[in-house]
Image: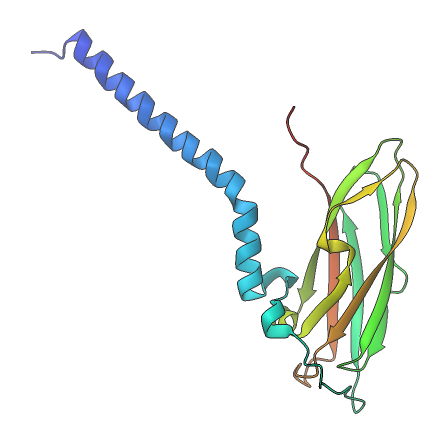
Length: 183
């Protein structure tokens, strides 16, 4: 007593539809991962994305002149994208509570327009909630003409509530090429 050909065909069609729905779900999930990642980082302060609500520096905050924190600056770009990307200095010493500035220089070494975005990361991760970027080229995508060199500022504050045990905080940026829309 075997399964009829029609019954097998119906079973195969149902299985194909189920597999198609699973594939469609994972394609949608793949597109949703970036916004979900941003929300999780914003809520938790992970991966250097600071929680602006938790980090907001009071207008009454005073500069803590009794100590300084060494802030190191790193830069990376995706291999093969044709960018040179570096901070003007490797590190500076800042007093918690003071507004500080650092410039990064970015050069598009290719003969094509480059559109990308820098993603920040702060280490140690615990310090991320005390590091507030007031102005940053990482807040949006950047477009560079062929051969263009641009100096881009970062303005930041290390919150005085940062534990005194932290003598060094590292701000690292990785520059990624923007995802191109499919035509």
